[in-house]
Each structure stands twice: as C-alpha cells, then as structure tokens.
Amino acid sequence: MESSAGWKLENSYVKLPKIFFSNIKPTPVESPEMVILNEELALSLGLNPDALRSEKGVAVFAGNDIPKGGVPIAQAYAGHQFGHFTMLGDGRAVLLGEQKTTEGVLVDIQLKGPGRTPYSRRGDGRAALGPMLREYIISEAMHALGIPTTRSLAVVTTGEAVIRERKLPGAVLTRVAASHLRVGTFQFAANWGDIDKLRALTDFALERHYPRVERNENRYLQLLREVIDRQAELIAKWQLVGFVHGVMNTDNMTISGETIDYGPCAFMDQYDPATVFSSIDREGRYAYGNQPVIGGWNLARFAESLLPLLHKEEEEAVKIAQAEISRYMERFRSYWLKGMREKLGIFNEEKEDIALVENLLELMHKYKADYTNTFVALTFQKAKHTTLFQSEDFAKWQGEWHARLDRQKESKADSEKLMQLSNPAVIPRNHRVEETLEAAERGDYSVMERLLQVLRNPYEHAPEQAAYTTVPECSSPYRTYCGT
Image 1: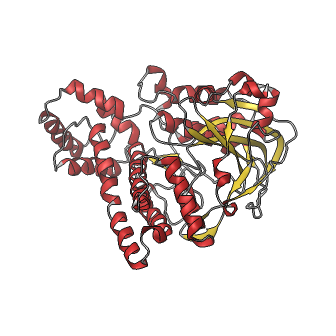
Image 2: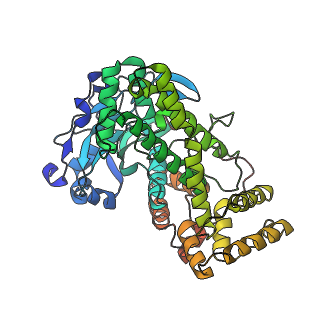
Image 3: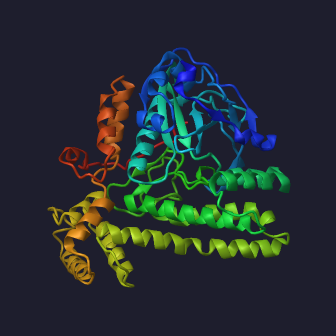
C-alpha cells in the first residue's frame, strides 16, 4: 500500500551544512484516525487518495511511519518575535522530505504536531485539533482567493489529549509548502554560521525558488530584489481581502512569498486599520494597518543577513541593502493600488485614483462598514440599507466613482465583471470558523465540510453562499490564539 500511495520523496535540504537541521523521529501516537484529506491537493502531488486513507497512509500522517525516501528532520532558524531576536527552530514540526508534484515542482511535506524536537524548549511538540483545523480551513480559503499560501494535505487525530488551558483532542496536520525557508533561517545562518554556510543556504534558496537568476556576482542582490517583490505583492493581497496574519515575526515570513503560519489569524469584518486578533498582540504591532510597514521591517532584517554576500565592504553592502529596501513600499503601493482599482472596476490609471480609494476606506471606517460586503454591494450596484450607504458622504463619493468609470473606454458591464472577479462573496468569517471548530471538537465534521465547500469558489457569488456572508452582532472583540 505504501508504494501505491505515490510517495517519491527527495531530501535536498539535508545536503546543507548540518547546522541547519537535526535528524529526528516523530513520536508515535496511540490511535490515529483521519479527519480530513485534501484529495484535490493529493492528486496534484501525484498521490493516491485511497492509499492515503488506508491504515498505512494514516500512520504516515500521524508520524507513526515514515514513507519510503523520507528523511525526517527539524529545521533550525531564528527570528524576531514581536521585535525581539531569539533562537528558534521547529519545536513541533518535522519535515519528511520533498515531494515532486505532477508538474515537476518540489514541495515540502511537513508534519505539524508529531512530538518534541531539539528545538521544543519547554513545549510538548504536540498540537490540538482546533488550531490544526483552523490552519486547514484558512489556508485552503487563501488558496481559493488566489493568495500564495502553504496548503494543508490532511489532519488526523492522535487518540491522545494535549494539555493547554484544558484537555483538548490532539491532532497532526500535514503541511505542503514551496519550502520552509524563512527570513529567520537566514538570520540563523548570519548569527550562528559563517559566510560559507550563509552562502550555501542562499545558493540553495536561489536554486529552489529563483532558478532563472544567473550565476554572477550580483545573484545575491537579485535574490533580495525577488524576495522584496514577492513579499510586497503578497502583503498587498492580504490587505485587499482584509486578512490579518496576526504574528508577522521574521520566522513566519517565507522566502518563497507564501503565507505561512495560521495561528492567531482572521479576516476583518468591520473595516478598521487598527484591527488586531491575536490575544498576545496588546500593542497592535501586527494590526491590519501595520502589516505593510512590518513587511518592510522584516525585509530589512533579511537584507541585514545577506550583507556579507552583497559586498565585501560592509559599508558598501549596507548602502546596497538600504537602496533596495527603500523601494519596498513603492512596490507594495503599486500592487495594492492596482488591486484596489480592480475592486472598483477601474481598468486604467489616473493620479486621482489613490484619493478615490482612500476616501472610500475613510468612509467605511467612519460608518463602521463591513469590508467584504461593502465591495460586493458596490460590485452589483446594490447599496444596502446600511449607515454608510444612506449617508450624504457616500452619495458624494459614489458620484465621483461613477464619473471615474465614465472616463474609461470599458463598459459598465466590463467593470462589473472585473469587480466580481476581484471582490470575494465569502471569506472564512470568524463566527463560522469558531462554529466549525466547536462542532469538530464534538466529533461533528459536517459543519467544516459545508464551510469548505462554500469557500472553494469565493468569486462565484452563488445564492447558496448568502448565508455565509452575514455578520453577527458582537459585543466583544474577536480574539485568536497561537494554539501551541
């Protein structure tokens, strides 16, 4: 059955210097059972869903068995956590290896929650069912929204409890990622390695994610530019759908440009740049409105790590790095404004567009409008009976918007189509996610299955999605937790 599953694992990461990882064996669990398998993702990886659902397949997802070719390791990295630098590493994750997809691309296969590693510190290396299902739901929603993200292949229960504030059912999630190379991986190399180890890691990153970059003396500078551009585009896409990551530490920022780590994350309902969901972010460092700036701060830490490779003279290397980082915000604004134009049905560019967009956002904030539903209402010209749409402020803005649309050659129908493709009807609303997790803890997975089905085509704007677009009255702020 193992051979029929389709596992064809490679292990390029273990060819790096030993400082970057530790060989580890997952800790077996008592009685693993499949909760959910991502069949569509499995097929794209060249895997056989039937074999994955078998007892042998479930054993792999639980960490009780290692598929042929797998070399389980825990990766070492560092990171600035809420601005404070520290040594980290995979405290509850094990990389099994790299699977080649049906398109010939290598992706990491990682177990999350399979037991202690040398980097666990005081943690138990385990994960609870709720946070693992949260990651499954949110990461798949992000994928459907067209946002680069790690994905979830499976979640299995372990048959064992984990102790947090209370006893919770244990689980293991299988994560699929372009790689798990983080800004923090390079910080680790720069602080605890030498220049040869840093160069080895950087060459690996270039080969894995940017193979088109030629081998010349400027290739490390080109890597910095590529990473800056991908992160600028990624964070712009977060902002465009109202996604709040919640824990933008440097160890949660990938070199590939994928969203990673779905701990204290959520989607914003009422538009407010100060929105914070993480229970531990008391100062609002990672608030929705701060995410672009924090992205630049994290990239500056990446650039610092690359200084020895950018130029042999440190002063010149710093100048090079500063010049590149200074362009980040311009790249972000360009991606964000392009996306905002599309959300408003605008095809061409006018210098006044930024004011049009910012004025709308200010009105949404002033009148406490729902972010997602406001853009959907604009898309279909169905201004609902909300405080925003009934205001004189909005009537004035709407007149300016319509005048703007009249100045482009595309028709109103063209604009509506563009807006429909740019404004999701549904997002994983916080109350719906919580409803799903509460049902799952009782052993009822049907609520999750229905939610995932609705989230699969967010730009469809189908009648059956309507029930998932409502926003409940909430007397207290929504809070999420890291789930460790």
